Length: 205
Image: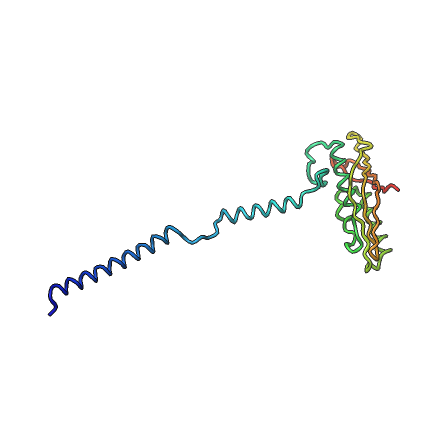
């Protein structure tokens, strides 16, 4: 028969074990609540996406000295000579930059900024150069940069404007030949239903 002293000792040992276990469990759950696992938040994701969009927008911005023409934009206000000058610079760059391996698509892309007459000329011109360049295994292309433009004539009432664009051009041909040269482009604009459209384009020699 176990005497009272042994019973007391066993009781103390069991009680101490229970207290230690309870303290251990309490410490574990307390630390877990104080230091939750780090997970990505919606705010972090949104910030990263916004930064990505800002970088893409920065890369896609047009050159600071002129704006890209927008045939559907700004028709609610009256365009002035400066607006036409900026449009002429952008048009000249795209008009003068093409390659045979890109199928001369720049002319098709610009047709929304051309009059019907100019669009017909562009179609005939592209047909001629494609016919003359049926073998496109050898690359040929020209890159054009507009550096300045001068409005030679502007009349909103008459709906006519002439702009002379100064460009720098880089011609790349077969066998890696490269030629750099300056060339002016004279653009004739006419106003058609409140829109200024290119009615003629003439490279100056």
